[in-house]
Amino acid sequence: MYSDILLPTDGSPGAQAAIEHGLEIAQQYEATVHALYVVDTRLSRSGPLLESLQRDGRETVRELEVAGTRVGLSVVTEVVEGVPAQEILEYRATQGIDLIVMGTQGRTGVARFVIGSVAERVVRHSPVPVLTVRRD
Image 1 (tube, rainbow, N blue to C red):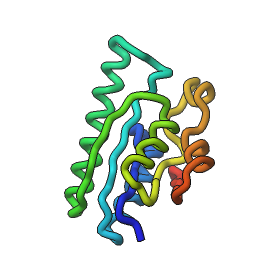
Image 2: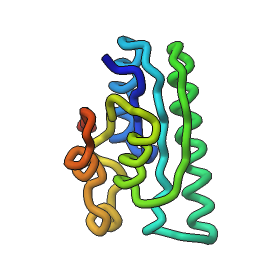
Image 3: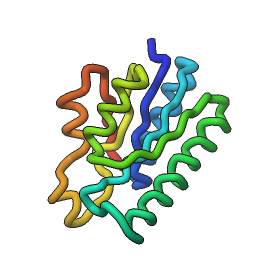
Image 4: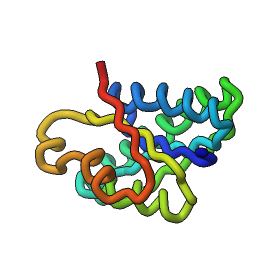
């Protein structure tokens, strides 16, 4: 049923809860996991902040890669720059993703209110199923 599962992550506890569900589903279907981190260019387009976000992204997808390979899954990692919801949907289209599993609550603070809900935008515009996972 699912051969390619996208797990977009921002490294937050909410994303971690979704990753756990996504890895379990991927194991059941022997699917390839796609770990995607989007460096939000609305926060920074250059300089030390952008470099820090890129570094965080590489570390975050690497952790997901380790977790996936530990349970026998094939994991593809990618760090891209742009607007998160748009980049997630673009990645889905170009990689033939069958299912997106993501947290409903990512980063917090003022940025969340300015930027809005990434999960909501993805659910609204995705042509494939999106499983949203609440953080408990």
